[in-house]
Amino acid sequence: MDRDYRLFATAIERGSLSAAGRELGLSPAAASKRLAAMETRLGARLIHRTTRRLTPTEAGRGFYEAVRTILAAADAAEAQVAGRAARPSGTLRISAPTSFGRLHVAPTLPAFLDAYPAVQVELLLDDGFTDLMADRIDVAVRIAPAPASAGLAARLLAPNHRLLCAAPAYLDRNGAPAGLRDLAGHRLLAASNQTPWRLERAGVQRLVEVASYVATNSSEVVRALALAGVGIALRSTWDVGAELANGALVRVLPDWQGATDVGIYALHAHDPLPAAVTAFVDHLGDRFAPVPPWDLTPPARSSIDA
Image 1 (cartoon, rainbow, N blue to C red):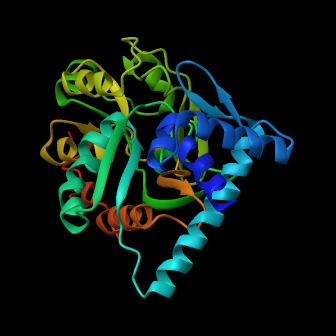
Image 2: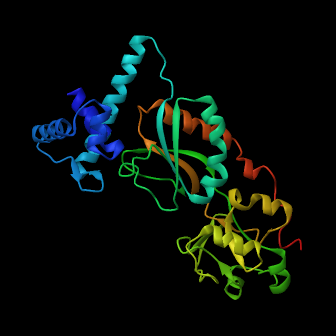
Image 3: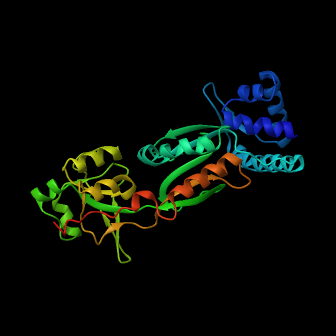
């Protein structure tokens, strides 16, 4: 039964039954026969098979989580009996938002790989919310309200501070808004998946509808346009902390900020976890706590100082 469980779990993780069979020393025909026999024994289809990819059924998703827990516990027990500590190894697939991954996940990888040379990292950057199981993701970095996903654990890596900001040149030409209502008379910039703006001040929340002056699905385009003096944007300090510090951007309506329920999280399966997952989540946590590096330097000034 252990071999059948490993075949099923490996097939889900590799996205291919034949690849799982090769890894476990089985021919494609033998692997297919073993999986079919397990499905018959359980009375449920576990995997959807297509010519392009292999994905778990609804029953297969739940079964995979249970099997992964069983196999991890068995491996840990064997390692303990054998007197060896579990060292991080194998392939680690990481998903992160495009800008955050480029700016703050990728730069942490050299130190991680130096510490754990037996780990092979795949870093996938995508601004959509990936399906960890379907895409075989071990750790997903997400910037969102506290995730509530069945079968997944979430660790808060850092708060996500979001501020209204604009280039001094834009404010020199158009003046600074004195209140939220004044935003309607300004050029606002937002990616299509980042509206409306949820703003807070002293516990009061407001929604601001935004018709972006330039329509785009790219957060990086919004950042570039704000720096070029095109309009006002709501940006995270991890994205524009340096520009706020050197004056390339200044805060607008500094009493207001983005909703504080949004954080930067690492999502992964529940314990027991592969050692590489635990090591990487701890690695990020150590670098982003107690204060993330992008929040160490205070903004130079705000529009009310200009």
